[in-house]
Length: 335
Ligand code: ACO
Image (cartoon, rainbow, N blue to C red; front, side, top):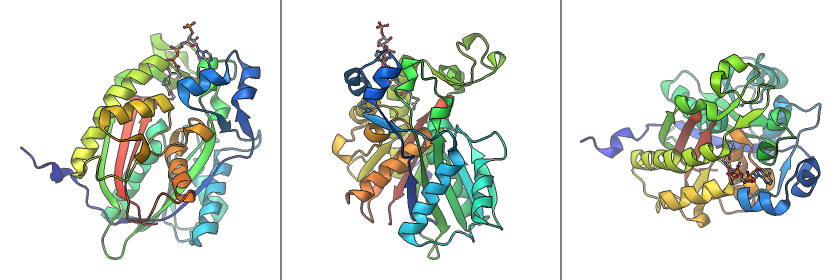
Protein backbone atom coordinates (compact mmCIF):
# COMPACT_ATOMS: atom_id res chain seq x y z
CA UNK A 1 0.00 0.00 0.00
CA UNK A 2 1.21 3.46 -0.84
CA UNK A 3 2.17 5.73 2.01
CA UNK A 4 -0.46 8.49 2.17
CA UNK A 5 2.31 11.08 2.34
CA UNK A 6 3.37 9.97 -1.15
CA UNK A 7 0.79 12.39 -2.52
CA UNK A 8 1.90 15.42 -0.54
CA UNK A 9 2.81 18.15 -2.99
CA UNK A 10 6.23 19.67 -3.27
CA UNK A 11 5.80 23.43 -3.54
CA UNK A 12 7.93 26.51 -3.93
CA UNK A 13 4.90 28.82 -4.19
CA UNK A 14 4.59 31.55 -1.59
CA UNK A 15 1.38 33.57 -1.28
CA UNK A 16 2.72 37.08 -0.86
CA UNK A 17 -0.42 39.23 -0.97
CA UNK A 18 -4.21 39.08 -0.99
CA UNK A 19 -6.85 41.61 -2.04
CA UNK A 20 -10.62 41.55 -2.40
CA UNK A 21 -13.40 43.70 -3.77
CA UNK A 22 -17.18 43.67 -3.78
CA UNK A 23 -19.42 46.14 -5.62
CA UNK A 24 -21.09 48.84 -3.54
CA UNK A 25 -24.72 47.97 -4.23
CA UNK A 26 -26.22 45.63 -1.62
CA UNK A 27 -29.26 43.50 -2.41
CA UNK A 28 -30.94 42.51 0.86
CA UNK A 29 -33.40 39.70 1.50
CA UNK A 30 -36.06 42.36 2.10
CA UNK A 31 -35.50 43.58 -1.48
CA UNK A 32 -35.61 39.97 -2.71
CA UNK A 33 -39.09 39.73 -1.18
CA UNK A 34 -40.16 42.45 -3.64
CA UNK A 35 -38.67 40.64 -6.64
CA UNK A 36 -39.97 37.10 -6.11
CA UNK A 37 -42.31 35.17 -3.83
CA UNK A 38 -39.88 34.52 -0.97
CA UNK A 39 -39.11 35.65 2.58
CA UNK A 40 -36.10 36.66 4.61
CA UNK A 41 -36.92 33.80 6.99
CA UNK A 42 -36.94 31.19 4.17
CA UNK A 43 -33.70 32.44 2.67
CA UNK A 44 -31.85 32.62 6.00
CA UNK A 45 -33.12 29.24 7.17
CA UNK A 46 -32.37 27.40 3.88
CA UNK A 47 -29.17 29.16 2.87
CA UNK A 48 -27.77 31.38 5.65
CA UNK A 49 -27.67 34.33 3.22
CA UNK A 50 -28.71 37.79 4.49
CA UNK A 51 -27.52 39.96 1.60
CA UNK A 52 -25.34 39.97 -1.47
CA UNK A 53 -23.44 42.64 -3.43
CA UNK A 54 -24.48 43.31 -7.01
CA UNK A 55 -22.41 44.93 -9.77
CA UNK A 56 -23.66 48.09 -11.46
CA UNK A 57 -24.90 47.75 -15.05
CA UNK A 58 -21.62 49.09 -16.40
CA UNK A 59 -19.43 47.10 -14.00
CA UNK A 60 -18.07 43.78 -15.25
CA UNK A 61 -15.93 40.95 -13.90
CA UNK A 62 -12.74 42.66 -15.09
CA UNK A 63 -13.71 45.78 -13.08
CA UNK A 64 -14.10 43.67 -9.95
CA UNK A 65 -10.65 42.16 -10.61
CA UNK A 66 -9.19 45.68 -10.81
CA UNK A 67 -10.83 46.46 -7.46
CA UNK A 68 -9.30 43.37 -5.83
CA UNK A 69 -5.83 44.03 -7.26
CA UNK A 70 -5.91 47.71 -6.24
CA UNK A 71 -6.89 46.59 -2.74
CA UNK A 72 -3.96 44.14 -2.68
CA UNK A 73 -1.50 46.80 -3.82
CA UNK A 74 -2.81 49.31 -1.24
CA UNK A 75 -2.46 46.82 1.61
CA UNK A 76 0.79 45.06 0.75
CA UNK A 77 2.63 47.61 -1.42
CA UNK A 78 3.46 44.88 -3.93
CA UNK A 79 4.63 45.54 -7.48
CA UNK A 80 2.81 43.65 -10.16
CA UNK A 81 4.31 44.98 -13.39
CA UNK A 82 6.81 42.07 -13.29
CA UNK A 83 4.09 39.42 -12.95
CA UNK A 84 4.69 36.79 -15.65
CA UNK A 85 1.32 35.01 -15.69
CA UNK A 86 -2.28 35.92 -14.87
CA UNK A 87 -5.02 33.38 -14.19
CA UNK A 88 -8.62 34.45 -13.66
CA UNK A 89 -11.10 31.81 -12.49
CA UNK A 90 -14.57 32.91 -13.55
CA UNK A 91 -17.85 31.61 -14.93
CA UNK A 92 -19.11 35.11 -15.68
CA UNK A 93 -16.43 36.74 -17.86
CA UNK A 94 -17.15 40.08 -19.56
CA UNK A 95 -16.95 38.19 -22.87
CA UNK A 96 -15.89 34.69 -23.92
CA UNK A 97 -12.82 36.42 -25.34
CA UNK A 98 -10.77 38.47 -24.80
CA UNK A 99 -10.27 36.79 -21.44
CA UNK A 100 -10.70 38.74 -18.21
CA UNK A 101 -7.05 37.90 -17.52
CA UNK A 102 -6.07 39.71 -20.75
CA UNK A 103 -7.94 42.77 -19.55
CA UNK A 104 -6.09 42.65 -16.24
CA UNK A 105 -2.81 42.44 -18.20
CA UNK A 106 -3.73 45.49 -20.28
CA UNK A 107 -5.13 47.55 -17.39
CA UNK A 108 -1.93 47.30 -15.33
CA UNK A 109 0.48 47.34 -18.29
CA UNK A 110 2.01 44.01 -17.28
CA UNK A 111 4.03 43.72 -20.46
CA UNK A 112 5.78 40.36 -20.05
CA UNK A 113 2.90 38.18 -18.88
CA UNK A 114 0.74 35.47 -20.38
CA UNK A 115 -2.90 35.49 -19.37
CA UNK A 116 -5.77 33.00 -19.39
CA UNK A 117 -9.17 32.49 -17.78
CA UNK A 118 -10.12 29.12 -16.36
CA UNK A 119 -13.68 27.95 -15.93
CA UNK A 120 -14.21 25.43 -13.17
CA UNK A 121 -17.28 27.16 -11.71
CA UNK A 122 -17.25 27.29 -7.91
CA UNK A 123 -14.10 25.13 -7.82
CA UNK A 124 -12.30 27.75 -9.92
CA UNK A 125 -10.23 29.55 -7.31
CA UNK A 126 -8.81 26.37 -5.76
CA UNK A 127 -8.19 24.98 -9.26
CA UNK A 128 -6.34 28.19 -10.20
CA UNK A 129 -4.11 27.91 -7.11
CA UNK A 130 -3.33 24.32 -8.08
CA UNK A 131 -2.32 25.46 -11.59
CA UNK A 132 -0.27 28.37 -10.33
CA UNK A 133 1.53 26.10 -7.86
CA UNK A 134 2.41 23.71 -10.70
CA UNK A 135 3.63 26.51 -12.98
CA UNK A 136 5.84 27.96 -10.24
CA UNK A 137 7.16 24.55 -9.29
CA UNK A 138 8.03 23.69 -12.90
CA UNK A 139 10.09 26.87 -13.16
CA UNK A 140 7.98 28.08 -16.12
CA UNK A 141 6.88 31.15 -14.16
CA UNK A 142 8.07 33.15 -11.15
CA UNK A 143 5.24 35.51 -10.21
CA UNK A 144 1.58 34.80 -10.86
CA UNK A 145 -1.60 36.75 -10.22
CA UNK A 146 -4.44 34.39 -9.34
CA UNK A 147 -7.98 35.74 -9.26
CA UNK A 148 -11.45 34.36 -8.56
CA UNK A 149 -14.02 36.87 -9.79
CA UNK A 150 -17.69 36.83 -10.69
CA UNK A 151 -20.57 39.03 -11.72
CA UNK A 152 -23.13 36.26 -11.32
CA UNK A 153 -25.90 38.87 -11.13
CA UNK A 154 -25.53 39.24 -14.90
CA UNK A 155 -26.36 35.57 -15.49
CA UNK A 156 -29.02 35.20 -12.79
CA UNK A 157 -32.72 35.03 -13.59
CA UNK A 158 -34.33 37.42 -11.07
CA UNK A 159 -37.74 35.88 -11.74
CA UNK A 160 -36.58 32.40 -10.60
CA UNK A 161 -36.80 32.28 -6.82
CA UNK A 162 -34.98 28.97 -6.60
CA UNK A 163 -31.72 30.51 -7.88
CA UNK A 164 -31.83 34.33 -7.62
CA UNK A 165 -31.70 34.37 -3.83
CA UNK A 166 -28.36 32.55 -3.87
CA UNK A 167 -25.93 34.49 -6.00
CA UNK A 168 -23.77 37.58 -5.52
CA UNK A 169 -20.79 39.36 -7.09
CA UNK A 170 -17.23 39.78 -5.88
CA UNK A 171 -13.54 39.20 -6.54
CA UNK A 172 -10.45 38.00 -4.72
CA UNK A 173 -6.78 38.05 -5.74
CA UNK A 174 -3.67 36.21 -4.56
CA UNK A 175 -0.14 37.05 -5.61
CA UNK A 176 1.85 33.80 -5.78
CA UNK A 177 5.62 33.88 -6.15
CA UNK A 178 8.41 31.34 -6.41
CA UNK A 179 10.03 31.40 -2.99
CA UNK A 180 13.77 31.91 -2.80
CA UNK A 181 14.33 29.30 -0.10
CA UNK A 182 12.38 26.67 -2.05
CA UNK A 183 9.85 26.34 0.79
CA UNK A 184 6.33 26.55 -0.56
CA UNK A 185 3.01 27.21 1.12
CA UNK A 186 1.01 24.50 -0.70
CA UNK A 187 1.01 21.18 1.14
CA UNK A 188 -1.46 19.09 -0.87
CA UNK A 189 -3.99 19.30 -3.69
CA UNK A 190 -6.94 17.20 -4.82
CA UNK A 191 -9.41 17.52 -7.68
CA UNK A 192 -12.14 15.39 -9.20
CA UNK A 193 -14.88 15.90 -11.78
CA UNK A 194 -18.20 14.06 -12.17
CA UNK A 195 -19.00 15.18 -15.71
CA UNK A 196 -21.95 12.83 -16.04
CA UNK A 197 -23.75 15.03 -13.49
CA UNK A 198 -22.97 18.25 -15.40
CA UNK A 199 -26.60 18.83 -16.38
CA UNK A 200 -27.51 19.35 -12.70
CA UNK A 201 -26.00 22.84 -12.77
CA UNK A 202 -25.44 24.75 -15.98
CA UNK A 203 -25.60 27.96 -17.92
CA UNK A 204 -26.42 27.57 -21.56
CA UNK A 205 -28.01 29.38 -24.43
CA UNK A 206 -27.87 26.25 -26.57
CA UNK A 207 -30.58 23.68 -25.85
CA UNK A 208 -28.78 21.14 -28.05
CA UNK A 209 -25.68 21.34 -25.86
CA UNK A 210 -27.58 20.28 -22.75
CA UNK A 211 -29.77 17.86 -24.74
CA UNK A 212 -32.67 16.14 -23.03
CA UNK A 213 -31.78 17.81 -19.72
CA UNK A 214 -32.25 21.41 -20.92
CA UNK A 215 -35.00 23.13 -18.98
CA UNK A 216 -34.02 26.71 -19.73
CA UNK A 217 -31.83 28.11 -22.49
CA UNK A 218 -31.70 31.84 -21.98
CA UNK A 219 -28.16 32.19 -20.70
CA UNK A 220 -29.04 32.09 -16.99
CA UNK A 221 -27.80 29.76 -14.26
CA UNK A 222 -30.03 26.68 -13.98
CA UNK A 223 -29.74 24.09 -11.26
CA UNK A 224 -31.39 21.07 -9.73
CA UNK A 225 -30.81 22.38 -6.21
CA UNK A 226 -31.70 19.17 -4.40
CA UNK A 227 -29.43 16.97 -6.51
CA UNK A 228 -26.53 19.44 -6.29
CA UNK A 229 -27.06 19.52 -2.54
CA UNK A 230 -26.97 15.69 -2.36
CA UNK A 231 -23.83 15.53 -4.46
CA UNK A 232 -22.14 18.17 -2.34
CA UNK A 233 -22.73 16.49 1.00
CA UNK A 234 -21.66 13.04 -0.20
CA UNK A 235 -19.06 13.33 -3.00
CA UNK A 236 -17.57 16.61 -1.83
CA UNK A 237 -17.29 15.30 1.73
CA UNK A 238 -15.38 12.30 0.33
CA UNK A 239 -13.11 14.60 -1.68
CA UNK A 240 -12.26 16.60 1.43
CA UNK A 241 -11.28 13.37 3.21
CA UNK A 242 -9.06 12.44 0.24
CA UNK A 243 -7.34 15.81 0.38
CA UNK A 244 -6.75 15.50 4.12
CA UNK A 245 -5.25 12.04 3.61
CA UNK A 246 -2.94 13.32 0.91
CA UNK A 247 -1.75 16.12 3.13
CA UNK A 248 -1.00 13.79 6.02
CA UNK A 249 -2.88 16.17 8.34
CA UNK A 250 -6.04 15.60 10.36
CA UNK A 251 -8.92 18.00 10.98
CA UNK A 252 -7.28 18.83 14.32
CA UNK A 253 -4.12 20.01 12.57
CA UNK A 254 -6.00 22.37 10.24
CA UNK A 255 -6.66 25.81 11.71
CA UNK A 256 -9.18 26.93 9.08
CA UNK A 257 -11.57 24.95 6.89
CA UNK A 258 -12.72 27.21 4.04
CA UNK A 259 -15.26 25.45 1.84
CA UNK A 260 -16.88 27.22 -1.09
CA UNK A 261 -19.72 29.36 0.31
CA UNK A 262 -22.52 27.65 -1.61
CA UNK A 263 -25.03 27.56 1.17
CA UNK A 264 -24.75 27.49 4.98
CA UNK A 265 -26.62 24.19 5.21
CA UNK A 266 -24.16 22.52 2.83
CA UNK A 267 -21.26 23.92 4.88
CA UNK A 268 -22.79 22.60 8.12
CA UNK A 269 -23.32 19.16 6.56
CA UNK A 270 -19.75 19.10 5.26
CA UNK A 271 -18.52 19.91 8.76
CA UNK A 272 -20.56 17.08 10.25
CA UNK A 273 -19.34 14.60 7.64
CA UNK A 274 -15.67 15.53 7.71
CA UNK A 275 -15.18 16.33 11.39
CA UNK A 276 -14.40 20.04 11.06
CA UNK A 277 -16.09 22.21 13.67
CA UNK A 278 -18.09 25.34 12.81
CA UNK A 279 -15.55 27.27 14.93
CA UNK A 280 -12.71 26.35 12.59
CA UNK A 281 -14.76 27.12 9.47
CA UNK A 282 -14.70 30.40 7.54
CA UNK A 283 -17.34 31.39 5.02
CA UNK A 284 -18.51 34.44 3.12
CA UNK A 285 -22.09 33.27 2.62
CA UNK A 286 -23.97 35.53 5.07
CA UNK A 287 -22.91 38.91 3.68
CA UNK A 288 -22.02 38.04 0.11
CA UNK A 289 -24.17 35.03 -0.88
CA UNK A 290 -22.74 32.45 -3.27
CA UNK A 291 -20.03 34.28 -5.24
CA UNK A 292 -18.71 31.11 -6.91
CA UNK A 293 -14.98 31.48 -7.68
CA UNK A 294 -14.72 34.54 -5.41
CA UNK A 295 -16.20 32.98 -2.28
CA UNK A 296 -13.00 31.44 -0.86
CA UNK A 297 -10.74 34.52 -1.03
CA UNK A 298 -13.61 36.65 0.32
CA UNK A 299 -13.92 34.28 3.30
CA UNK A 300 -10.16 34.30 3.97
CA UNK A 301 -10.11 38.08 3.82
CA UNK A 302 -12.99 38.35 6.29
CA UNK A 303 -10.91 36.19 8.64
CA UNK A 304 -7.84 38.37 8.11
CA UNK A 305 -9.73 41.60 8.67
CA UNK A 306 -11.23 40.32 11.91
CA UNK A 307 -7.75 39.26 13.08
CA UNK A 308 -8.45 35.54 13.49
CA UNK A 309 -6.39 34.37 10.51
CA UNK A 310 -2.73 34.51 11.43
CA UNK A 311 0.62 33.71 9.82
CA UNK A 312 1.70 30.10 10.17
CA UNK A 313 -1.81 28.69 10.27
CA UNK A 314 -2.85 25.74 8.14
CA UNK A 315 -5.87 26.10 5.85
CA UNK A 316 -7.90 23.68 3.82
CA UNK A 317 -9.65 25.46 0.92
CA UNK A 318 -12.27 23.47 -0.96
CA UNK A 319 -14.24 24.58 -4.01
CA UNK A 320 -17.08 22.60 -5.60
CA UNK A 321 -19.89 23.19 -8.04
CA UNK A 322 -20.64 23.25 -11.77
CA UNK A 323 -18.99 20.49 -13.74
CA UNK A 324 -19.69 18.94 -11.36
CA UNK A 325 -16.15 19.67 -10.25
CA UNK A 326 -14.36 19.85 -6.95
CA UNK A 327 -10.87 21.12 -6.17
CA UNK A 328 -9.07 21.64 -2.88
CA UNK A 329 -5.76 22.84 -1.51
CA UNK A 330 -4.10 22.54 1.87
CA UNK A 331 -1.76 25.44 2.44
CA UNK A 332 0.19 27.20 5.13
CA UNK A 333 -0.85 30.84 5.43
CA UNK A 334 2.15 33.11 5.70
CA UNK A 335 0.74 36.63 5.57
N1 ACO B 1 -38.45 31.22 -1.30
C1 ACO B 1 -39.49 30.51 -0.85
N2 ACO B 1 -39.75 29.27 -1.23
C2 ACO B 1 -38.92 28.70 -2.12
C3 ACO B 1 -37.80 29.39 -2.65
C4 ACO B 1 -37.59 30.70 -2.21
N3 ACO B 1 -36.56 31.45 -2.66
N4 ACO B 1 -37.16 28.57 -3.50
C5 ACO B 1 -37.83 27.41 -3.51
N5 ACO B 1 -38.89 27.49 -2.69
C6 ACO B 1 -39.89 26.49 -2.40
C7 ACO B 1 -40.02 25.47 -3.51
O1 ACO B 1 -40.88 25.92 -4.52
C8 ACO B 1 -40.58 24.29 -2.77
O2 ACO B 1 -41.96 24.46 -2.58
P1 ACO B 1 -42.96 23.21 -2.71
O3 ACO B 1 -42.54 22.29 -1.60
O4 ACO B 1 -44.28 23.85 -2.52
O5 ACO B 1 -42.73 22.65 -4.06
C9 ACO B 1 -39.91 24.38 -1.41
O6 ACO B 1 -39.48 25.74 -1.25
C10 ACO B 1 -38.74 23.49 -1.26
O7 ACO B 1 -37.93 23.63 -2.45
P2 ACO B 1 -36.58 22.90 -2.63
O8 ACO B 1 -35.97 23.28 -3.95
O9 ACO B 1 -36.78 21.46 -2.34
O10 ACO B 1 -35.80 23.61 -1.46
P3 ACO B 1 -34.49 23.14 -0.76
O11 ACO B 1 -34.73 22.91 0.66
O12 ACO B 1 -33.82 22.07 -1.55
O13 ACO B 1 -33.63 24.47 -0.87
C11 ACO B 1 -31.84 25.31 -2.20
C12 ACO B 1 -33.32 25.03 -2.13
C13 ACO B 1 -31.49 26.36 -1.16
C14 ACO B 1 -31.46 25.85 -3.59
C15 ACO B 1 -31.11 23.99 -1.93
O14 ACO B 1 -31.56 22.97 -2.77
C16 ACO B 1 -29.64 24.10 -2.08
O15 ACO B 1 -28.98 24.73 -1.30
N6 ACO B 1 -29.08 23.41 -3.05
C17 ACO B 1 -27.66 23.44 -3.29
C18 ACO B 1 -27.41 24.07 -4.52
C19 ACO B 1 -26.54 25.28 -4.41
O16 ACO B 1 -26.14 25.77 -3.39
N7 ACO B 1 -26.24 25.75 -5.58
C20 ACO B 1 -25.45 26.88 -5.73
C21 ACO B 1 -24.59 26.73 -6.90
S1 ACO B 1 -23.73 25.27 -6.84
C22 ACO B 1 -22.64 25.39 -5.73
O17 ACO B 1 -22.16 26.44 -5.46
C23 ACO B 1 -22.34 24.10 -5.14
